[in-house]
Amino acid sequence: MNDQDRHGTVVVSSRCEFDLIVDVLEKHGATNNDAQLQATILVEGDLRGQHSHGLRRVPVLAKRLKNKVTASGVEPVVSYAGSARAHVDGRHGLGPVVAKHAIDTLLVTAKSAGIAMVSVANSGHVGMLAPYVERMADEGFIGLALTTSEALVAPWGGTRAMVGTNPIGIGIPTEGAPLVVDMSTAAVSAGKILDYAARGQDIPLGWAVDNYGNQTTSSVEASQGAIAPFGGPKGYALGLAIEILVGLTTASSLGREVHGTLDTDTFSTKGDLFIAIPSPESPSILNGLTTYLEQLRSEGTEHGSVLIPGDRARKLREERMKDGIPLDKQLWKQITDLATIGE
Image 1 (cartoon, rainbow, N blue to C red):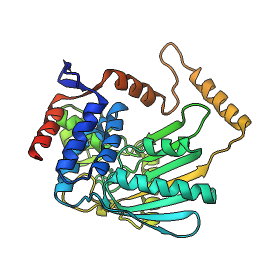
Image 2 (cartoon, one colour):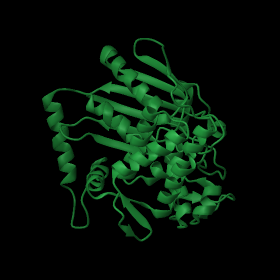
Image 3 (spheres, rainbow, N blue to C red):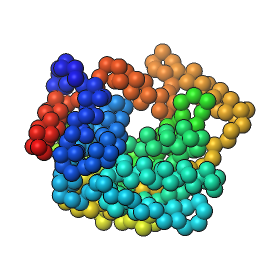
């Protein structure tokens, strides 16, 4: 660990953060293998600057394990509905553990059938979607990942949280690093608002409404209210479509009946959907894609460069692998205390 302390932050190596997370999760009931898979996804969140999906998730995960609403060491159950479609019952396992099992199944099925879809139910929060679609892209597939969450977003024109943040992930192979989209259909993730609230910081106007439906810059009021859909009615429409698509294909809950990723005492009722589509192997198509992406990057001006989705996260990840990850000092202490409490 690098003990450098800057403005309330502590800078740690990715290995140090990984080891601490594994320690905490093991002491709260996770197997070593499950703890490592979960820790890998959380560290990736912090490496890529998505702190709402990083170390900050550990206290809830630890308590869910302790309360036995999240299981560890369980084997997911796979069933098939045709040659290209499978369903995974996660048996309430940790999200990244079940997701790995699902994608293992997806890739084997896609290589056999040419295309595949795997639906997942009874599984915990999967974290960032980027690592999952990157894995599909590395295997030569266009990867899609869709997931639902608790009702945290107010429908366009409404005041109550009734729709999930419902992220979408897309990974597309290129001649170089894959194009990677990982975005929520809400204006911002719930974890980011909670992160701001924990730091005592205001949020930008337009992110959320208070519990009366009024726009607010208070992160505390926002955490008690609802998140706004990104892009107004368009984000609401996309988020709702993803909610229904995932809910129907996974036979999981919808709207305010979705639980289990933010609380510590209920089983998870959300769903995940992974799809693998063969990517063209033609050199001319790949060359054309590479040329197009480079044309986009070359459009930058003196005011800033044009980035392809995934570029910023990769660059930041490289820097943080070398220089360490800046983390909230109080959060770091909270997690190290959890390791002690778990003994």
